[in-house]
Length: 346
Image 1: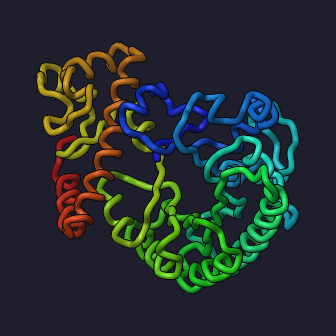
Image 2: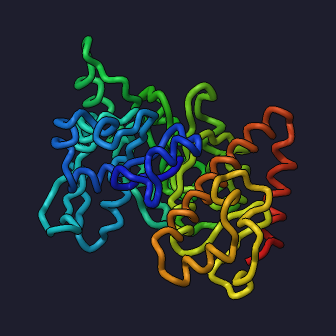
């Protein structure tokens, strides 16, 4: 899922995203709450109308952004009191408030507020975060159901978020507690924050084994191209990451042969496309030499073209993963993908 933090995927128009085949994008509750404000977006017809996007939108709870403001926030059982990074104004984000904001935005999938902690974390800290996450999920679920009863009930799905750091038994316990709340989908949070890839896979597998197979399972904030098939093999259905767009703005392009750092001097006369196997419009039209020139000249077009290619590459990788599942070749596909990124060009 491409990440559109402030109701836009950086460097791409909605028309471009539609052309790339994106069926769902993310938007950021924290940023939209502070600017332009959820009530304004509600007044203007909701997030879909505001940003002119007719496909699905997932909104996060704002929790990760708030917890990353370690110098500007205080966590209690009530919620998180924080100061805006924009103007210093004080706000209180509770499970109910996060739900209220997302109902105003009118997203298709809304995440509950959870407590994010740094990893590795001591067990007592992880236990405390698990307890608070479950209680917040219970409050968010109650508020959501009370607010959406009746004939005017919005078509929004609310997802719970499994926590537990890198402790397998805590992950399992968190999943069991959330299952009692009967969410239509579940996420695995608090991973891909510095722990080894193998540990991320292990925790994802522990949780996925307990979650209903008929409901979406979402691993938040992942991952590198060569890792995607590994997560799917552990039962994950949905993923998001800023990497394809952020890397593109820093001249890092993902290809079937590995990463291409397009600013390198080796590409100054390279007349090949970014990726000879790629069918995106950028690879069909432009050369590596031209992309390198645009980055060297500081042209905005450089980031736009690079972002277009990277998002296409990620979406196409997911298409290939679905194809590999259909034909029973997922393990082989995952191994080949990893091998290309171990030996590919930089």
